[in-house]
Amino acid sequence: MQLFSGLVSPSVKTLSIEPLRTDIFHQGENLVDFILSHVQSRNLEGSILAITSKLLSLEENRTAPSHVSKTDLIIQESDHYLGEIGYGCHLAIKHGLLVASAGIDISNSESGDYLLYPRDPYLSAHKLRTELKIRLQLREFGVLVTDSHTTPLRHGVQGITLAFAGFSPVKNLVGEKDIFGRPLKMTKTNDADALAAAAVLMMGEAAEQRPLALIQNAPVVFTDEDHRADLEVPVDEDMYKPLYQHFLKK
Image 1 (cartoon, rainbow, N blue to C red):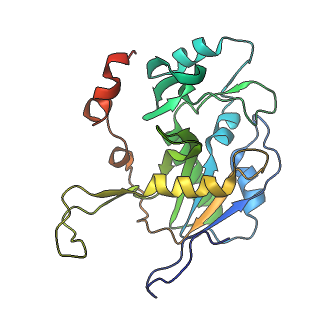
Image 2 (image 1 turned 120 degrees about the horizontal axis):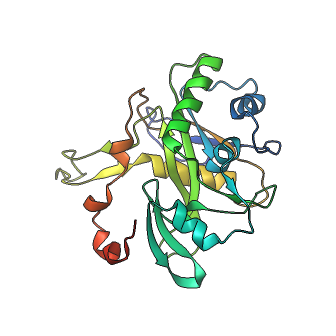
């Protein structure tokens, strides 16, 4: 399914995103085997596989019983806990993201238990990519682990990157010229989160049962190098830190 279309230069390929409807993924299942059973005969060369973080959490048994205190669980799971905010939500920093409830969720949980983020999402993404590359004999291939988050002053949720592997997440345009010949001084494009937002839009949030999406013709550079630092901004360097620094707690 093509997500974007229209008049483009003949040299520019059209980005396409195909959400994949799957069976129910059960806790403790082998994720690679599950993915292979659903990509079937598709050619994944040069593509990025978007996958909801909940599948990784379920494979890794990252759950907690729903009878425990969610507030205590959020504090325990947070890298930095910022406290309770509006509508009874709790804000935290977890795995480099400013998110509600430290990413803890109960939606689409078969057992009704809380689903926690994977313990090390980048390591999980790297292992998943490596095994899929070997099993499918791929050269250029990426993995994009997604979640949903809210944005201040906006209704609704949208997709965001929890982790990725196999491609450069940010395009540096500093020094490039705009249409009037003025050089850009600060602009970098966050390609990873842009792709995550588009993929999650197609994957859905409720009962769609589409936890995977194949992204093809993404304008990224594939690489085996670790580019996590290109995407994440340390808390002490974050331009928004003055807004929340007084609430930071380990």
